Amino acid sequence: MGEYAKFNGEEIKIGTCNMMYYLRYDQKNLVEPIPGNIDPVKDIRSIWFRAPRADEENIMPGEFEYYGFCGSKPIRIYIKEHYKNFAEETKELCLKNPGLVQLSHKETGILINANCYHGHKGENAENVHYNGFNPNTLGIVGIGFRDGEANALIGCVACREIFARFTLNDLEKVAPFGDDVINFDYVIHQMLQMEREIA
Ligand SMILES: [Zn+2]
Figure 1 (cartoon, rainbow, N blue to C red):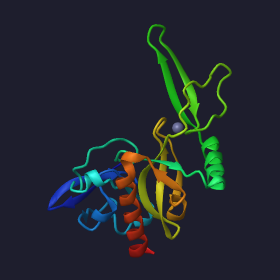
Figure 2 (figure 1 turned 120 degrees about the vertical axis):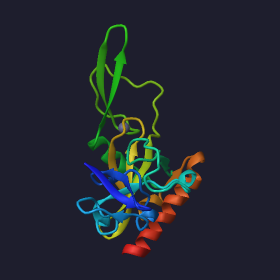
Figure 3 (figure 1 turned 180 degrees about the horizontal axis):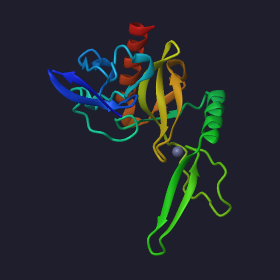
């Protein structure tokens, strides 16, 4: 269901269901809630905000582009080498929550569904093999406040499944890929702000 709010007196779309595609956390007080819709301040514990990106800093509520996931382009991350246990836990989560990729062959019209394990090699049909395997498919796709702390929603950029939540403590064990360093810092900054303001 579409969620709307008022911004500068005009009705704008802020998201769908509990995903605030068109609203950043730091903009939650800029919009005026409309009865019957999500109130981003009161409903803070049940919604997810668009992952904040430095390159979208000057964009106003409701004016963002929609790139899938929770609105914004995911901020690509990988688990740092040192954190073997965390890497193992994340791997288990990936293997337990496969997404789906569809492969199509134009000439024959054949369509094959395969499981995506978000950077891990898991079970697939007998004749499905890996070639040029890509282990780095994780990205931060949104942020929100759950169970007393800030959480980042983690999705797979290959199959688009959102399958995990990382806390600030978890995020210390990951690093962003080159282009996303500044965006990653922005996410951490907003999550820290969230913990100061809500906790
Ligand atoms: Zn995946």
